[in-house]
Image (tube, rainbow, N blue to C red):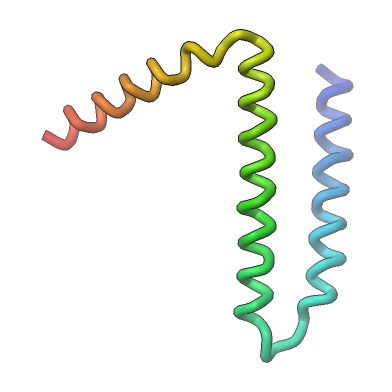
Length: 83
């Protein structure tokens, strides 16, 4: 567990440093909207990559069969709550 936490901390530090470095390159007050879109797209891409890795991990562990059932139950519960 401790090794996993150290790995997490290193990854977080690296990600924050990379982002801070990119922010330095996006300081033009005339291009704030472009900068906001740039970072939103980076966030979207990172989320997509993360979801892909989680899918691969679940597949490796044989958990892929469970997810659709949970999603179906969640959808049914939302529909019941809406009524």
